Length: 290
Image (cartoon, rainbow, N blue to C red; front, side, top):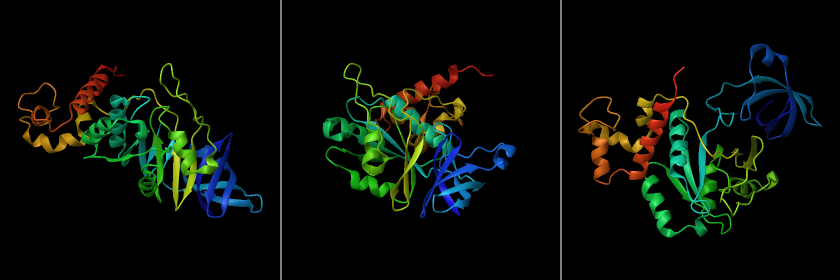
């Protein structure tokens, strides 16, 4: 029988398929081969007790993709959830998330949560910056705004929800998967930061073949697996202007006759995106090489 691991706790793997959820142990063969099953893995199971849904993991289907943080296998896409207000969106962090997903080659979209309390000019600014290259959905669980569009985006896919604490990922998960019963945190009024509420990685089935995975919130994100000179390739709005650069391999920083910098001057590239590109590049350049 085949299914997907939706949770792993204390050596038990919970495998979901059309027949239900099976509690499984991993065969010793995985340890012997140095293979660790991950949440999201498609696995073969040997049913030991069909009535009580017990079994053993006997095989793992080859992974088509995986993320390290959170450690999940086979995500089809990532939905980055950022609040439009309370807390104010940290665009540097958002651009790091986007660059990381570009590096991983995982399709990504942006959900702007709390759109009911976000100023219209802020929503327009975010759309101007991001909507040309990324799907952007304005949502409000309070007013049920944008949720039908979001459900359509999630249908039939395994989607990882990412983003900082306090933006409503757990609330969104509870809405999409009412059986999840996840604890939702309140924003600290003093520092306007979300309390960490997600404690482990778990998939939730949302019907129509779709799964979502809420992840621990991130206050920071390190780009640890990309050369600084390659960073430019993961800002998609730069690509169409590189043909106007004088030098091959232009990194769009100190060079003269740079098509990207010219596009920036002409307002064709967002100042905040370019500034964050600079900051991320400097962060990568400052890392010690071992």
